[in-house]
Length: 200
DNA sequence: ACAATGATTGACT
DNA sequence: GTCAATCATTGTG
Image (cartoon, rainbow, N blue to C red; front, side, top):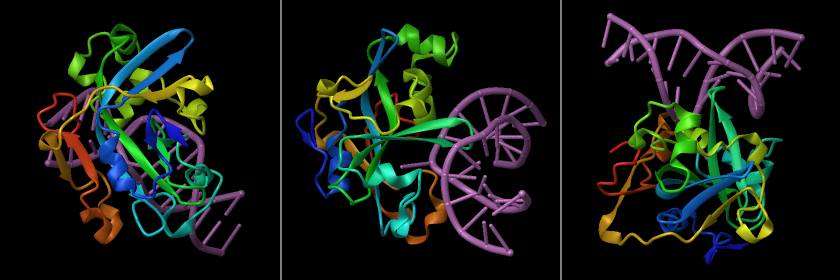
């Protein structure tokens, strides 16, 4: 599926994770619009990537959505507390996904503050995968839905701004120490110096 | 049916 | 730096 000029059915999920930086992630729930610019991502590339939920071709009720054609959401509950948002990518039956780890808040900052805590500083609203989901009210209700704005979804991505390669840093993914040699892959991308990134 | 666990966060020493 | 929260999902029997 083509979403916002981005071909999310491309098989190169690592390049896609880079390309998604600068796009705007939006939710509109109950007439409340919140959005932010994507400033940190990670690529997950099943079946070979041991860090992926679809590692080794695992196909279950939860992971089925990762095998869909690119362009839909994959939201799951982590540690029983936090919802994490992914962009499913790759052709049908290719289980690739892009975890969105941080946003630079744009619209609805006061709504985000209501959801996150009234005394939360702007920099702490969306600087982590669980935090941004709370700020945008991304829950399991938004799992497995199209990210095309035209489809009438309550959640979508759209072009925002462009970051030059000179400002993009590649590094190891966060929190995947269990994944043997796959934890060494430089499949995390973030905008250098951006104050809304989760881990510098 | 049961036990283990996690792509995190916030509170605390 | 340490640690607990909290539960859907998963593998195992």
